[in-house]
Amino acid sequence: MSAKKWLLPFLALASLAFAAPGSGRADQQQYVVTYVEFLPAFKEVGGELIERLAAFGRAQPGAISFSSNAEIERSNFYVLIELWKDAKSRQTFENKHGTQALLDQIRPLLEAPFDERPGTLVE
Image (tube, rainbow, N blue to C red; front, side, top):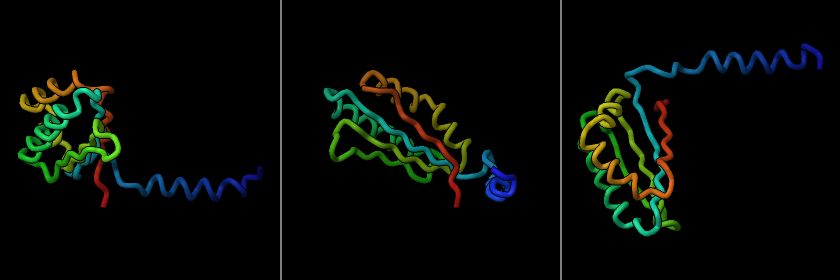
């Protein structure tokens, strides 16, 4: 392939890469989506614990939103959606004794490990 044919698309991609916002500013809002799958026998108690975790999260400084939702078709699957004012607020929540205590109660009930997908809110 000639240099002219690949140079233009390469330059277009390079300009997009350098124009993207920086990924690590501590003052940017943080979101986390976590998928949770309980063993079928523990779906009720697991759902209660997940809701307690979400309620505890909503009460924390820096929490903008924290919700838990069960999947309609699979009642042992849940999704947690969190929005925090910054990464430090989320980290503080993760390190709290209350958070760790709830997670310690939840983990033995899981079919699979938490599937956590953090990110930075881009507006």
